[in-house]
Length: 464
Image 1 (tube, one colour):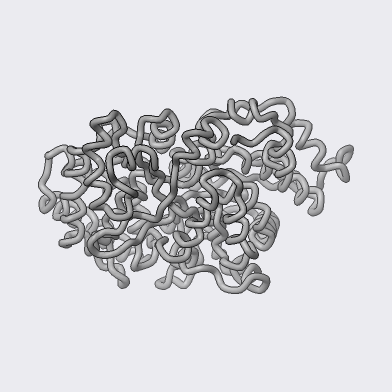
Image 2 (tube, rainbow, N blue to C red):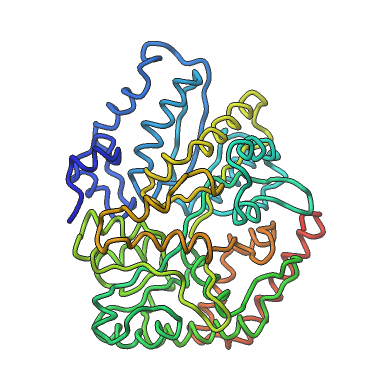
């Protein structure tokens, strides 16, 4: 059954909102309707300095989280308590995730902006405009031990020896699928990509197509790169040499064309990052690759849909089972920010990561710590979640540990990978094939041409 108001309040997930108000925020964070209760929560968070002007200021910008409870906690509880302890007025601006890259470039161009910038993918292309975040990494490692492999390969440049970002969190990317619908068409579960293709035409025939985007947006990028990995296709090798024009890539392109024609609709070519959430939550889609914002929203809005939703790792392909982090939470500090503000920003980031258990909890298991020891015993928390089917969130641990790679795997998330990712060359390649504008061989060769030019540019600049 859905959470009641008392339970939400006990977990600290409402910030004073009623269950009805939480539900009205809609679709995992796509419509944010704040009530006056939030201002009350914010004021309650700073009793020590209620009638005193704080000495310092700290400005943060990041996305509007797909689990709205996280923003409620971060903005109105955590930052207020941290600010009171550090005599700092912390302000947080939120923008849609699709606007983050352009906003970052605008702040760089202006040489002015926020003290801390929160990205949703590694931003190696901004390396010359940020500090070396090594000091923060070292401080956190003194408390928690080594950063995880995904965080390391996302934010460290082995060529320049610089940490171009701080890996705050990564988000496992499970398959959401309708157990009831898959059983109805005689397929137990989408354990392999062959299972997905087998079920897709039957699911589409009963009005529930598969939903995997091929559009210029983040979710399409993540899902399609993960699909390529399962077929043995990679943008680069471990030494930053372009390998996109491979047998694995061509097979993944051919598979996706078949899946689209048999079990999807043309809407996927114009999707935004919200589209697969919305399609699944309205009951249309039978399968989507996304973070748990989908099922968390369903638990609030449609308990029956949530009960019929199961989670699995990325389907296994002919080569392997290997997904991608759904998003990679990366904090950066601009090198044009004043030294006092840099010092304050470093402390804020380190303190947040060292005490990440609360962030994990209030994100409702969405944000996994980039430092594995930052949240002690999180496996137990995953298993104790009471929403049916019982134990469904345990799989997130397996996905995080065994089946999650960084963007640019098996290499590092370098500046060329950053540009390829943010210009959506992978979704465009898949869309060209699915729409019969290119053959798999033609699309892979064209992508190789474009990517080699991008790699050559950044290699000449000394970043690869």
